[in-house]
Amino acid sequence: MSEIRTRNRWDEVFARRTKANAAEGLTSILALANSTDLISFAGGFPDPSTFPGIELAGHFNRLVGGGDVSALQYAPVAGLPGPRSFVADRLERDGSRPDDDELIITSGAIEALELLGKSLIDSGDLVLVEGPTYLGAIMAFQSFEAIVRAVPLDDDGLDVERLEAAIALHGPPKLLYTIPDHQNPAGLSLARERRERLIEVARRHGFLIVEDVAYRELGFTEDRLPSLWSLGPDVVVQAGTFSKTFIPGVRLGWGAGPRELIGGMIWAKQNTDQCATALGQRLLEEYGRAGGLDEQARRSRELYGRRAARLMDALKAHMPDGVSWTTPRGGFFSWLELPSGVDGSIVARGAVEKGVAIVPGAPFWPGPGGERNVRLSFSRVEDELIDEGIRRLASVIRNSTERVEL
Ligand SMILES: Cc1ncc(COP(=O)(O)O)c(C=O)c1O
Image (cartoon, rainbow, N blue to C red; front, side, top):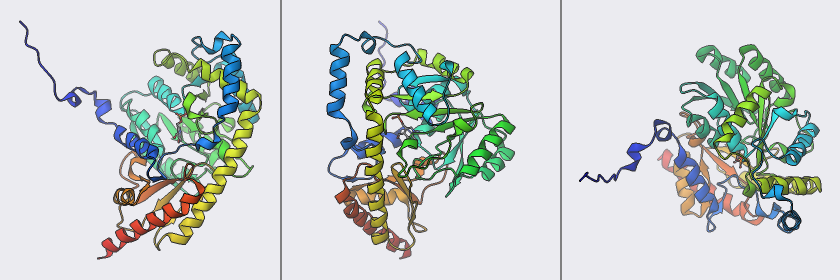
């Protein structure tokens, strides 16, 4: 009789790429963000008051009750024709329309990054990101065993001069990942002249730019800088999402870029989920064509702009000397720098004890960095709780600063 061997250390069987991953980071952020008994500045969640419940129910009933089987059937890998043309129309309004083979509908922006990773990255390939950057992107690229290195940001976004210095040192990357508008986690945007220079650098060195436009439509004012994809369609893939402007519950996003690369993403999608939700795609199309999406974005910009202003007022009123922060002009985030010697993860732990959730800065860097930072997301904190949350956070920082000085 063969011996039955019971494993009690399943972590031993994980692949190298899984062991190397920072998966803990995102899971714990999402757990904190969902907690209802904390004032949570933790997750980058849209506020539920922006969700179009009743309106969506009407579209749902018409779609499902009206016998439109396309909403209930498998969809083509690159997306249903109607929703694809709806997304292409929106992109055209934003400066450039993709041809039919230059667009893919994905299950959220995170899947667009996964598909790029799966189709482009070999083990050991260099991927450059902004430091700090979106943790989900670091995880996606690392899961394909890329070497992920950061190029720092300053107030004008990605520092293109330092990018060139990094290329001189390490050689050109296979791809550079950037969030040019209202960045996660820093809340900063890439200046216009840097956008043009970045395209020129990518062309000169022959690498791909992956532009993540998750917060592009959520500027607090009307002025928008040109997207990188509209400036350099030959060297840019744009990854977008409807999670922040519509609802994350449908998991819908897109990729737009050179046809060979979109073809690679379509190939990669065949054996991930095969197609993005057909029901979600049709709901988005119906709701969007009826003007719902534009109206929702207008309301969202107003709401998040107001919360950002409240956050800025609260920070000015309560933060001790030595703390600085970014002033967002859109999106969900402000990035705090703590006084020297104060550690963001210790502040985050202290804050939970005072009933406030924030995210420490270190996970937003692929290597060392961000230890003295924390990220604040103002998108889902009720207006009247912002001041109280920041007052409590400031007292935690003040205590940590005093401890350092002892
Ligand atoms: C910069 C950035 N990209 C992508 C995403 C994820 O988008 P999705 O929900 O479409 O996967 C987020 C969400 O937090 C984000 O901040």
